[in-house]
Image (cartoon, rainbow, N blue to C red; front, side, top):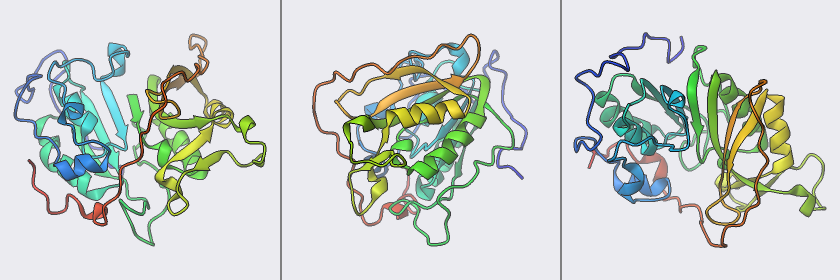
Length: 289
């Protein structure tokens, strides 16, 4: 049975119910500091949305009713969506870190009907070790689709084979008029003449290649098209060479493709966070702040 086959509960989006919180409510806990550090920053402001504004300001209201957050971590976006007005009717968070999912399920899911979190049990050394775990598995969505599918800081940590699988999985999870929002490290393989035709990625860490994976832009554009998707938005990195934010939609007569703009950002450094030895154990015995 699919994890998501049970009936959706909760008030109509036009009729707020008693579980709705005001945008500036103080009863939504922040993830513990060690979890926040594990995903890159302990700054609580990055987890907060006190104004209740759209979490992604450039998107249309019709993008927000139902959300799949693939790689939800310790609830950075989930907490902001709980504060957003109007709040999404449906939010599903998936992550391979069992402790973070446990924290979110215990502390965020009870605050709103339609919000839930599930462990996506695949192998990732620091976060989800285990010799018996697969490198990828189906998302088990039971045919459910979403108006917005988010995969931020996901493909930056997947090998090419995994990326092919999950691009297909996530494209299938996007509703016919929905949006897939992703982030990537990109390069132009034409500048690396020593690379073979079948080599499309660069790595920064010889001991853990998934620490940061950089993709050839031409390969990615072809991979997106092969899955019936079109690049509809591209935000260049804030630091040159860092994460691009790319939005995609299903191809159609009214869907216009955009070109990748030039990366004109200032040079800087945004190194991945260091992994503590007990990274996979965090959240199994941690209480909310």
